[in-house]
Length: 229
Image 1 (cartoon, rainbow, N blue to C red):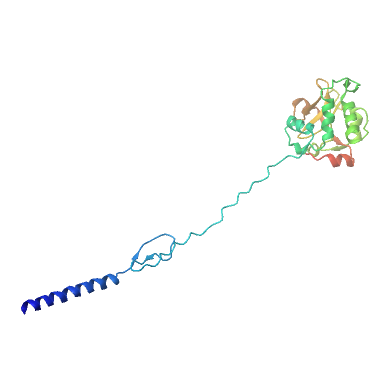
Image 2: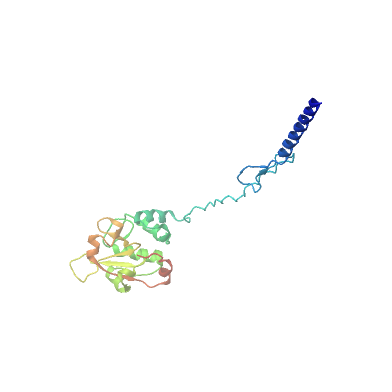
């Protein structure tokens, strides 16, 4: 009898422990896993439900790449490019292509007193020919007469197509040389030593002999004289 009671007690204790363990397992707290980019990081371990997919990160538009059209210089006359390099100026400033083609055609023509052709030319015949061919302006034949014909202007007002005058003699009041102003203090003229060339007003020889500048007033010169000092 005592043996039966002992077995009954053991059976009750065994069944009670199993039910306690099962209840504890069913009430087990879910495990939380920290996963970046998720709003609900809980994974339930006590059911067979499908685990929710993680949220996709926000998609940001990639920065646009803008390809700029390269700067292209407008198609210009070959002489404009050549003299822009020779004079160290921007090609856009040499707007009067005809002027530089004219200079090119006369370049290096030897100096000859009283000459007026490409076999030989003096300074005033060259400027007279240039003013007529490029600007359709008749100017007098000699340098002295050309200076009197022009309206005097200050050296700081010089523009392409203006005339510059010099005294290369011992007579203090004489005007013996003339050229046509271009850009950046440069002028084209028929020199006695090198023929038709471009020189600078800053050269010691010419700066010491400079006697003034003048302008022949005409709409054609105003329209084409885009350059400045």
